Length: 158
Image (cartoon, rainbow, N blue to C red):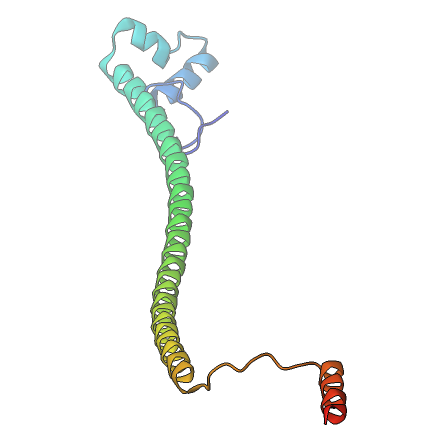
């Protein structure tokens, strides 16, 4: 399997010229030039450079994959954070609205309490005036039956 971004099939030979030489050597029945693996064992500088390039390419692909995954996670976390901030702003606005409403209601309640105190004072003053101007309490009146008996007595008394 090829790795994305590596530019195709991995090299077997150190160069295109070595590949050509190996092809001609196979047809002639001669010994082929060394492959990269053999050249690495032999300590060839070009083979080490090619192998290092392969390793760097693999590291780059792994880093790009990791970066892509991290970027996706970051975007997800950023969206979640933005959603949380919007929710927090809505809650704060609602709380401020409730505080304002509560303050207004407290002011109204204080005004109503003041009005109630004034009405109580006025009520007490009116009751005092009524008590001063009211006639003296009269004796308890007789009920109808007693009044008739008294009238009958008074009629025959004379």
